[in-house]
Amino acid sequence: CLMTIHYHGTPITPHATGINTLAGKFFCVSHARPDQVVIAHKIGQGVMLDNGAFSAWKRGHVVDWDAYYLWTEKWMSAFPTTWAVIPDEVGGGTQLQISLIKSWPHGHRGAPVWHLDEPIDHLLHLADNWPRICFGSTAEYANVGSLDWMRRVDEAFTALTHRHKFLPWVHMLRGLQCCDISKGFYFPFSSLDSTDVAQNFKVRGPARAMADKWDAQQCPGGPYVPQPVQLLLEAV
Image (cartoon, rainbow, N blue to C red):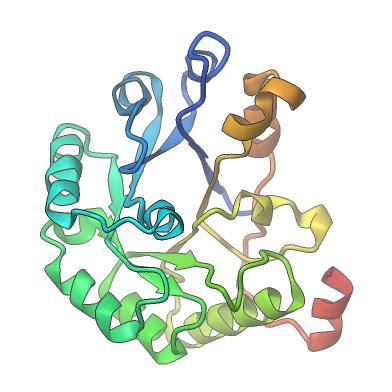
């Protein structure tokens, strides 16, 4: 199995029964909800900074990217293991995404987003130039684990495998369930994130037990083998 890093989305509140019980875990802190960025860096093993684009899109807000650049610079300059999701815009089209990537001022401490509805050629271009890439779901591929989603991600990893001897680091945004091979997932994601613990630990908790359960599940490792359609059908 691949050694998958699981980033647990914040805020995880209340502090006493939430994030304070998760020392040593990896955290995802969104620019849209930066409440726990300080404690995440104090007790976490690693932190990813999310650009908040999806939250802004859902609320009809416009993100201040200059403010995001300053925020990410502050934390990445202080913590060498912290990285950030490069600005993207949901449904904005490939040319807008390319423009946002070109405007990113912090080099490879950021990871560009390839949206599943974008051309495979664009994915390959990103993989040629960036050591870490994020996959982002879109309206067309909104349901992680659906047949359409599985086919598209299989197509993406197949193309990456043919292009690169060593796969780049691929992070699945909002895709923590992709480490659950019992549900038919078989993709070699290097890291994943989700707010599952934050949203559900008060009912399914405690938070530490939930996070430990997720962290114990790893994405498959080894050379990626493209999957026949029949196996994709069986997976879903």
